[in-house]
Amino acid sequence: GVGAARAGNLTFMVGGVEQEFNAAKELLTCMGSNVFYCGEVGTGQAAKICNNMLLAISMIGTAEAMNLGIRF
Image 1 (tube, rainbow, N blue to C red):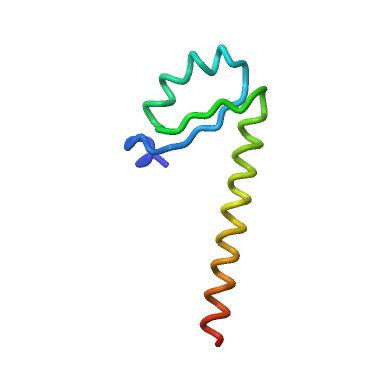
Image 2 (image 1 turned 120 degrees about the vertical axis):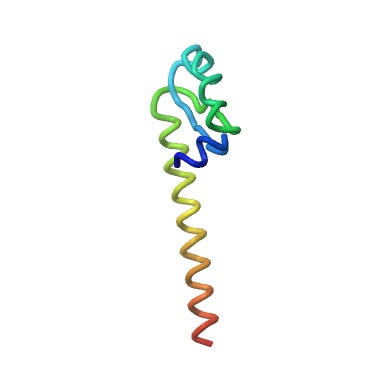
């Protein structure tokens, strides 16, 4: 959120015209240390969705393992 942006800790996965990405990259690096160009329009959102899904799967596995451990 805002705190991470102020600290410059965000990650940006950007899709669109590469020339426009290069023009915006300097501004994005003020808010994030990781700025990735993913390709054409929509590919940044696809990368973000995949990343979120992977994180969710990891959290579900962690929660299930903790629940199992507590029950044993």
